[in-house]
Length: 112
Picture 1 (tube, rainbow, N blue to C red):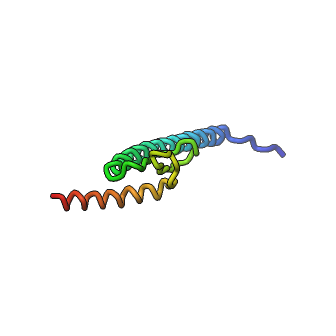
Picture 2: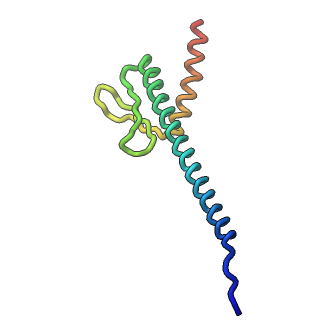
Picture 3: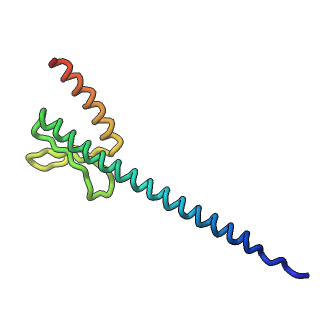
C-alpha cells in the first residue's frame, strides 16, 4: 500500500497561514509597545503638571516619576530634606490627578 504524498498546495497554504499569523502577532506586539510608550509619556506629563500645581500651594513637596524601579511609580518628596513622603502607583496617581483637577476648577470658578 502506498502512502499518499502530502499535497504541496496544502503545505504552501499552511506556510502562508503561519506567515500571516506571525505577521499579525508582530503587529499586535508593536501596537502594545506604542500604547505603553504613549501611556508613559502621558504619565510623565501628568507628574510634571501635578508638581507645578502643588508647588503653587506648597513649596515643600515635589513629584517625580521613579524610573529606577522599572515601574510607573510617582514618588512624593519633601524638597528640603529629600525624604520620601509617599510612593504612589500609576493608577492611584491618575485618580489623584483627576481629583485635584476637579478641585482646581472649583477654585477658579470661585475666584471669577
